[in-house]
Image (cartoon, rainbow, N blue to C red; front, top):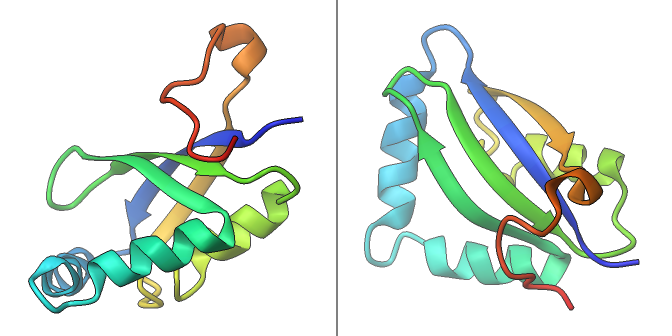
Length: 114
């Protein structure tokens, strides 16, 4: 068995989009902790390959890869938790769907977890 890929749809809860964008911009600014968070998440078995916002008020779509042995439920808990893309704000409803690689024919991105 190998790593699993997920398509995640992020929908902002009413009135929360601006707070989320401000938090994300601060995190990505120099010294904001973004690089450290990416490293911590990678060590925990989670890697975001792409972030695709449609509009400031959402939705946003991501492709995540999860290390072998991490269940869909564990991934959902991560995505919804303080170390996930919501920053613990409760700003997003996250809809996670496993990508069927047999139907896709290949992974959407080269694997981070071999």
